[in-house]
Amino acid sequence: IADPGSNDVFEAGELQNTNPPYKFRQAHCQEKHMDDTLNTDFTNCPTSRQDGATVAYVKAISWQMGQDGINAGRYGTVTHCFVRVVDDAIKPWDSGALYKDIVIWQLPLGWPINLGWWGWTQADEDTVVQDIYLIHNQNWMTSQGWPETTTG
Image (cartoon, rainbow, N blue to C red; front, side, top):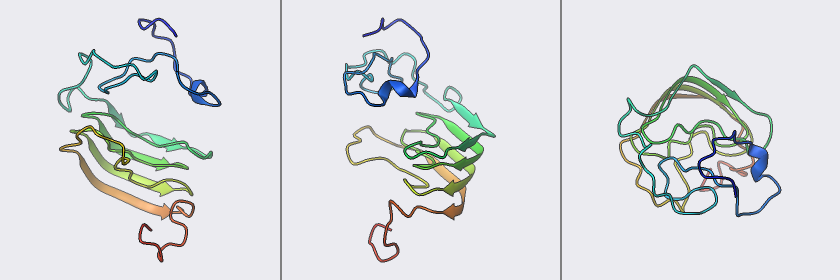
């Protein structure tokens, strides 16, 4: 386990072909760190949109399965973006966020807008999702058989 005070660069490869426990990574406004230990330091958490992350005028493009689009976190703002990914395009999972003026070209896996998973227990309040333009939905893996299925 790395020194909790270290600030080395996170590489996605750290999670591939390995099992927990993962290397320590400071959680940002989440209850647990990546190594599954409890987070007790919430001093870095934004308390308003002025403090949250801003993602603007970004093109998020991927070609491989399992590569998500954008989640700006609690009080994050995502505007004027283009997302073409092979998993969930935008993930407004955290309270107080704003997702606006986004163009989505959804590829075969995931959802254009993923509002969370069944195991998520943190409150998601006052998030705004507005003016989202879905220009293509090639989501044939997740919604196989659509429109005949109830989840399509």
